[in-house]
Length: 71
Figure 1 (cartoon, rainbow, N blue to C red):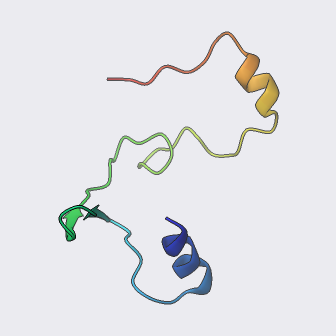
Figure 2 (cartoon, one colour; figure 1 turned 135 degrees about the vertical axis):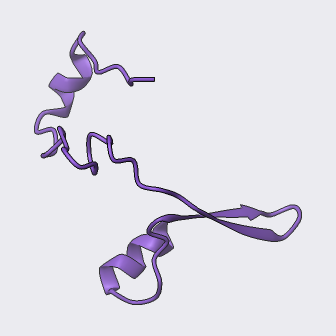
Figure 3 (cartoon, one colour; figure 1 turned 180 degrees about the horizontal axis):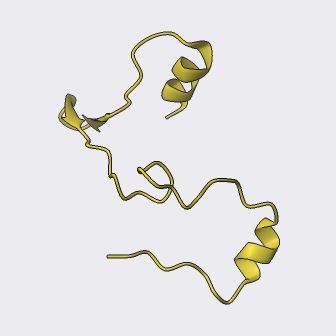
């Protein structure tokens, strides 16, 4: 993940956008999978409902009404 962040910040190389790299250290194998974008994603979908960062993390974490992930 650090390598991907550096590539994006520097603007060089081919970032893994839309792809997932799997590394098997025991077998010394790499696999690359294509990952499709979720159009209903609340962050990056067609109509995002998350549009800004949380300003008060302490208040959010102490809240009794934490968001529940939809199945």
